[in-house]
Image 1: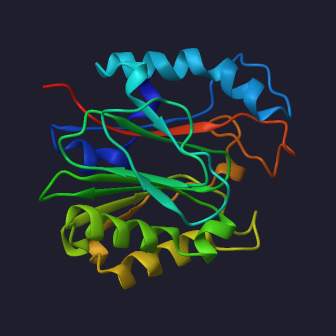
Image 2: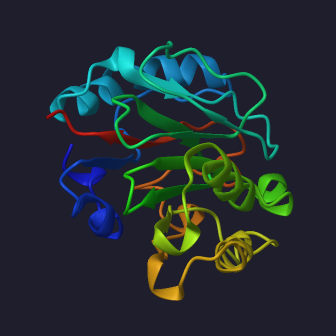
Length: 223
């Protein structure tokens, strides 16, 4: 898919070890309010993108996504079943797993440590942003992997924004990243509003729940 490697991910993908993708709207998929059914219908295309990058679908790691601020360390050993109770995942630089987050108006935030190669990916919607999930991710990466925020790059995905939503989650996320220690130059905002472009994105709010899910991916390219 040509549209899953957008310009706002260039800083991440400039590092040859990185596989960062954002899979947007997929034409021809029947949409319902049943999230599991829609994700099942989208999965073949999502897995095709993984295979194009040389990543086996079994290396996919998923978060349950409960609109909280908990994150989990994952690695090569495990399965693709969602990690319960978390909205973010992170791994060390040598891990071959591929982190994944589904969104349909909420923001996905990629975090990459340029020194160790450690990767993080979170789901930051209204509630997760209120609970500062990006701050929790960076604290957890520092505690578990020794990651220093000043060495990190963060990217904020397309998400719903004012005037289509009453809460400006992007401004809050940027503030939280700065407070955690990232420099302004290392915070990249896609600048795109999911509610403003239904040809490209899914929007839970605009489509009143009868919608699909975009998929954010962050893995390590095979050696």
